[in-house]
Image: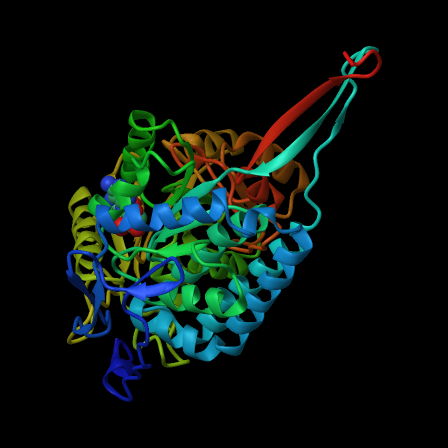
Amino acid sequence: EKESNGAAENGMKRPQIKFTQLFINGSFVDSISGKKFETRDPRTGEVLVSVAEGDKADVDLAVAAARQAFDHGKWPRMSGYDRARIMMRFADLVEEHLDELAELECLDAGKLLFLTKIIDLDTAIRTLRYYAGAADKIHGETLKMSSEMHGYTLKEPIGVVGHIIPWNFPTIMFFTKVAPALAAGCTMVVKPAEQTPLTALYYAYLAHKAGIPEGVINVITGFGTTAGAAIASHMDIDMVSFTGSTAVGRLIMEAAAKSNLKSVSLELGGKSPLIIFDDTDVDKAVDIARDATFFNKGEACIAASRIFVQEGIYGQFVEKLAENMKSWVVGDPFDPRVNQGPQVDEAQYQKILQYIEHGKREGATLLTGGRPCGKRGYYIEPTVFTDVKDDMLIAKDEIFGPVMSVMKFKTMEEAIERANDTKYGLAAGIVTKDINTVNRLTRSIRAGLIWVNCYMQMDVDCPFGGFKMSGHGKDSGLDALYKYMHVKSVVMPIYNSPW
Ligand code: ADP
């Protein structure tokens, strides 16, 4: 308690903000309307800077640039090798500016600086290099057809892509979407979240500097219901790749269906279970559960927000968790001693506090936290509810904040059934020493990513995306590269060509 938020009071770091305009066709420009919106420092709630507010008219310009670059420009026509070289340069430039970019990201999103460097920026650079490495290895297949006909497939870039990204991992999301699309030879319009517009603009500048041609990457900062909706319903965009809430994912799919039936890839919400069995080391299980829930202040679609603990160790687990959480520090994300920074904005902060009040009213036991903390900014105590029942709101809704729900279970069958009893299917975790339990659960749980005796471990190579209402289509891995490509079949006679 004493430590909480103390660090926010001293040495408030504020990196310089260089880019605040839209990036269209290789230049920074104001929005057509001239409108701007404010982005705030989540540590204080104070305005950091005003950023150009792009709207439908600006999206139209950006799409026209991307269309021109796709239909007539060099990027899709270049060899994969040449695209790779430019993408490698882009990666080097991100690496050269790593410290500054990490600071900018933290300032805008309230993320921990030291982790942003080693996780977010590192992932960005790796992602660019991974897909650069794949750019010259794209090929189709030879088809058997028949004794008279043969055929082959071509893999072609899908066209102009709209990327709509959220605010919890602005950098990782930018590169997870942009890098495979670039490698595929697509051109694109990126809309960062209105809460965190700053780093995407910087990346547009670095892409340009690296030699990515005009019109290939355009960045429109602005709001979801205006700029985002204009992308989703645009007649000249061939695909939209979205990460965000399930509610907005539904709107995007509707808009795609109502406009030009563009292809849609959705990475949406989750309510991921972490199932801890009796046979495990309780201290290790507590560490895994803590990080699985509170990493990035719970602002992670993959956060484990339902912790199922088998009855034999339930009491011990709860006791050790309470003890463990005493050393968890909330405060200024620039301070390396801090574990948890502020929530991204006022709206999220209020929403999380409402869920916490709900949990209290529904009769869950409040083990730790449960209140806002600090004198200013969007800080919330890490909150653990125990004795949570499956039908409580806190066990069903995605809270997207530092709130853990701990539940007791008896048998493996029961754990599987309850873990799957959700509309989501993004991720899940299993903690056990029993290989049979592992094999049974990995095959029974309906989720796109399952961690065993760990949680949140990710790699660029690991396809990422959910089942059920967590969406469809994969980010990361080669699956993501192929998502941005069409397969075209070519068929011809083997003998007796007509001439
Ligand atoms: P959250 O609820 O976590 O803020 P959202 O799904 O609302 O997540 O936001 C994710 C991204 O989707 C943001 O870039 C946001 O601006 C955008 N967005 C929000 N509403 C719409 C919409 N109606 N159409 C297109 N994009 C939208």
